[in-house]
Length: 516
Image (cartoon, rainbow, N blue to C red):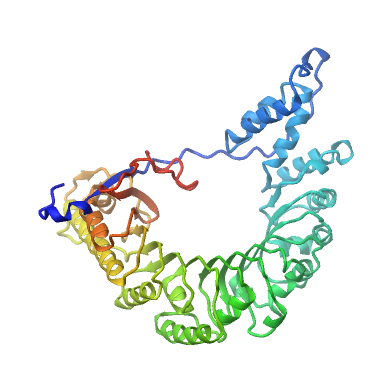
């Protein structure tokens, strides 16, 4: 693309585009564990190779696929391969989502007087609360004997404990437990007793309570006192963290904290409690008073939090913060951070002003990710055509990207990486972006006009403006979505540097979505 001003040639951008393709159809995880077969002596001839070699082979087979098919096939080849494969199979983790799966797994572990229980050490995920008493009794016996189990995740734990109270003591007694994930409808007394009496010292904890029932009689962090020194990662959802009692709480090694739908004390108190915090995620928070943080309250709360941190201190090691714009803005952080992930709905003037002030107060910011949920396109008018909707989409995208580029450039941030995730929905909530549509004149088109507009959008001039407005940028990624479907992904880099283009490494969530 030609540029009129030759002095601006250094701002040219090379953009590598990646289109979405349908994900492969997922298959159900096999619910049954293999039974020990009877092999003849002639089939048992593995002595020629060291068992460590076969373990490596089995591990490679396990890593080949999300499903255990290749591993299970190898395990059925002979008795020794079966025995060696049991540890590899269990190390994949166990997910139980049905009565049959629970009974099959418990039968497998309990065979030969629970001989396999000592091999079960990776993780157990229980994703259903509707099991018979027989299944729950069998599960309790397995957990009691799984003394090396390191991670457990249970959905609707309060309901399960109501049906199987013995499970609580079995969990409390697990000596090797490091990671605990609890999802519950209410913080029942049984659930609180479980959390407060765990013998293990956790390194990772996730506690999610339905927001309508999230009132705890005391600060829920106090229940994790036994793990204060060891906790490194904590997610708390649907809870009231009381402003009192913080002098008794100290998590000196916590590095990652996520707070969702939580009532918080002021940031200076949290900073004193969590001195080594590196990564913070917040969403739908309120403060000492019960007001939710909206646009009107954000400025007042930010001013108060700024004063408190300037007086009492803030986080010395905080590196990244993620959350809705109003919540992050209201934090009033006085400490430098290198990465922000901001979620913004629409583009109100108040939102732009908050983002501008946030960036000005974060001069050492190196990475910025903006997740922008645009307002829905209005329903088609009688005079609208497919091409007119495409033009409107292009104009909306240009206004959004150009506005962000100018705002970031004016802030003075020395950004190195910018990532924009722009969602453009339409009024049709059941819209399939990749299905043919018919316009008002009866003309068939290959896809929704908004999706088609995103598909056809050229971002070269936008990329040039990003690098021109913020010369420190070395990488810009643009994800353009219709509803939640990624239509196109662009990686943009300035041409005046030696760069590798097309070497995009997708995140696990993107694998299978894009042609790379």
